[in-house]
Length: 281
Length: 318
Image (cartoon, rainbow over all chains, first blue to last red; front, side, top):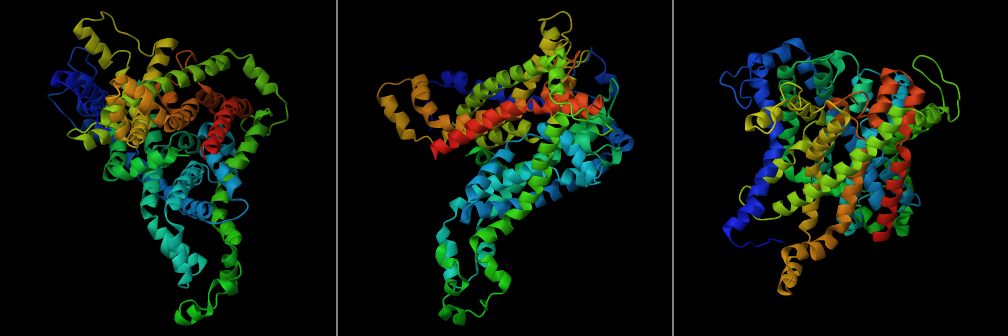
């Protein structure tokens, strides 16, 4: 649906300028992170100076970040938690999505509806009782507190997405394999799962970014400084009372954003598929 | 499929002979040939996790909300006492109002700007892929980290917006962006729109790409101008996806916690709390778990209404 335009001037006003404004507004905060993270403190806290650039770039804030906090430890925690919770959710979501899309059994429709409902339950509703559950299991303040609770929003999402994906794979392919002597399980594992790899990848990328970015559960369930994830660590350890260490804060924000941005940039198309697939009923 | 129900009829004898791999299946193998048993096995891991960490906490949450539990002491049943306390609590009522204001205004602007962005991105131009990819960045990066950047940009003394406005000569004294409730709520909504708009833009763009260009051409030949073509042709066609995106976003915005907690912590003077942040404040900082649970459970009626509407809508369109 390409819309045609008249004069170049009209096109500038109806297209180029709005687009440039939009991209500028989108990216400005990231530019601000970068600039802040390399400006020395004497410039940061001087209202007279032009804040948009610096003539004395420094890596001091990054050094402070690594020396004064457990940033590398947080990065490792975040990565470990994101990978394990994504793997658990993909495993559960793949099996459940297949069952709901392909198998005929009486409970399929109500279970599908139930998974959809859990998909819409926000962490805000459950974090208080979930804190009790986590404590009861004796996993409070360990990575497992979040590795086991992130799947509550990742599994419904993965199931939903993969269910939709399996519905697009023709049933006949599996039936051919059955006729050739494959068992029900063999047909599923050897025929359908490999065909679903793009869907699995999409769900995995999306789930990875969701768990990398999660805040509330990690804030409530992880308390000691060494156990924190990047979003929690940067937020809680670099703000002391009313004092904000803006240089290291922005350095941490930048370093915490780069890994997800990189993963995303390699798999933009898969990510977009997941994003749009996530909302299609 | 009924014809596969019995293993004997599932695999014709001739093929068993032809394919050595398909030995006589074990007892377990034969059980798994039955679809409802296989379905149970496949669904078990997901259902165990969801039951333990969603269904059970949900029931526990209802119990907490009708108990006077505080940290370190078992709670006793107090009926609807917590909810009565909430209704007499000025901060709760403010949070209630804020939640709706925040949700509706932010969703409105996300839809408006998201639609605009989607229409712009639906053109062919150079660097389109890069522009589209970079537009999603606010949605990708951890909200906490980007919100910290916004907090720095709204800083009382060193705000870059103040620097720009003062140097252009539009203001003579600093604006305290997060200094009073109304202004702070405006900032929260602005950041939420910045973060959530890409989600609208990209999903609506996917919707726009399914619109058949012939329809536009036909409308153009019939004399419809650009606005009429959008309003009468495009909009009705993408209405279903638009509705779903709005509902999803409304749920997420309604239940938002991190953006508000990071930018204002519900302040100044508890004027920007929403359900999520106030529940956290009461349960985690004041250690009143029962009271806190009753606040976060107050989300539920609205959530239920949206879910029921959405299920009804999906059924109808099926």
